[in-house]
Image 1 (spheres, rainbow, N blue to C red):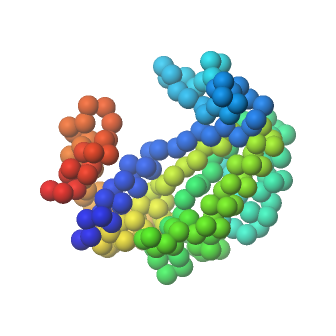
Image 2: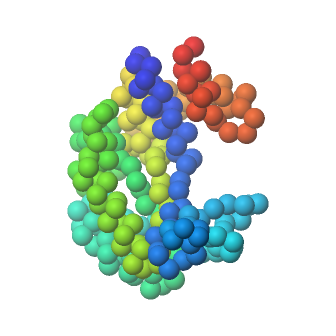
Length: 212
């Protein structure tokens, strides 16, 4: 197996737990340098600058289907109008129509706007559209939570990374949610640092384990 691709798959799984709260409004508290603040966590609470941040949030479909992309400005305007202050956006998508199939169908989850079409092949148009989403959110004083990857096959996800790394059969329609856990979770690269790490899965330990 290509160790580099295997490490990419491992880091993608770690990244499935990662998301960013990106401030998208020039009118919120700044960090003193004239740039808006990220939402940060302290003591189990969210803050913007020194102020506690409480919010209503929602997933928004603005990334994959052509009609959703076209309606994106109106979707965000309506979200702001009903008091939504945070939207979660899928800032990922792997493979094309000949790669890992979605659990649903390609009408619901087309692969025409994937962020990553193949190892080393990125889709600039997807990143440009993400920039537009963030800019539009700014106009509506909405924060954006960027989801960087997940387990769902509908967008490619971890099973697509595993296939690129040479792990076949992690996507399995006979299994719950279309994922064969025995093949998708045999990764000593992940489990070893999870046991020995003091608090988090360290990137350096992933690298160290991947060489063994």
